[in-house]
Length: 252
Ligand code: 13P
Image (cartoon, rainbow, N blue to C red; front, side, top):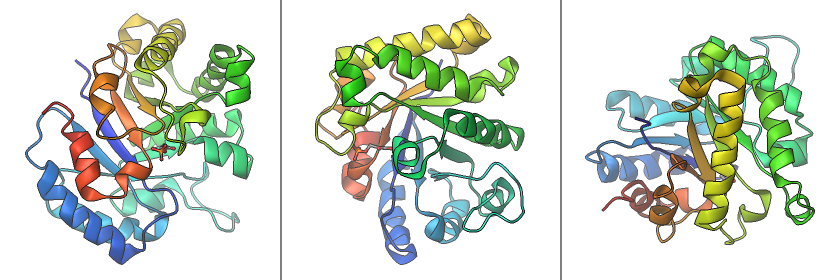
């Protein structure tokens, strides 16, 4: 019912030439994999080069790591939805914890961006997740609820099924410390319950909820075996084509 999605978030890694090399190696490795959607999110500077490559035979979707909510204007250093569409981008990661923590992105800004992305028929991948201190204080579920409700507030319930949610506990990002399959499933089920409350059970059942945080070829299968885990948002392990491809081939 829900097609699994494995997306690589390259963060601030790879020049355009390095990005093209990676994708050239990756495409033949994942081409024949059926029933899994694959996406890569290179930095802005490599989107055009990778986009050209993928347009030829798109076994892999092109994603961006962020976007501005306005289409144009005096916003030095920002990039808009039409600019991304122009390069073949079909998916945009929003509200990654690094953007929230390091660049002051608020829940409300994430919501406005998500609404703009959806209005352009692109897929928003909305990231949520608690810090270690918040989990320690027993606030993980409340934090994720606050982030989710704020991000979805500007979105019409009828469009909810098109949204992708990525649960990325901050303490699992880049630390080698993955959430256990039980912790992931518990939070994903919580998220799906909130989605049902927001947009109805039918919509909620169609939303893909990805797990992110130290995903690797060794832990992907047990995470994907959880009923509410519909894919992964992969950081470090997406920077090598073979490693990322073995995550995409989690079933074999
Ligand atoms: P790692 O896979 O490197 O832990 O990063 C996860 C992440 O932040 C993906 O968006």
